[in-house]
Image (tube, rainbow, N blue to C red; front, side, top):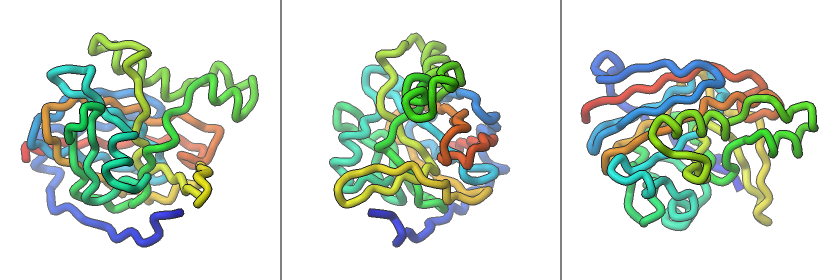
Length: 216
């Protein structure tokens, strides 16, 4: 199963009018607030990057992105234009309103030191991973390990076979590709700009990404 029928949906927003514009360096964590009605864009600056992302309700961090509810509501494991991202309480967090990539995974989760050891050998045990990035980011907001839940991997190519088998394949996004969302409530957004260098999720070469926010 693939998203080969994808049709890009472009945005007419000008980066010069954004109220927030930040570069997130390769391998680094980031967190920021997106208010209800604001528009949030993630740009894959150089292409083939994997952007592990979580959303939390700003009013109550125990309400957070739910991969299970999102997949169930959409009826598809892929996220694309029109997809609504749901919380663990069944409330909409954000809707994708523009997308030039068409390859966003919400099934494979985030890399960890433990999973890297299983997949790539014990020598990778002490390499940096997305779980550590998430922990650094959420700790700034009073949260810990138990608050890190299954995430979205923007721009990550994860084809799913009819029998349910996942494959983490070479990235397909190009430099400058973006995904844009509108927030349905005040959100805390947490990102790990994936540091993984052992699998093709970011072409074995972590690169910077860019985040922009518009007032509406």
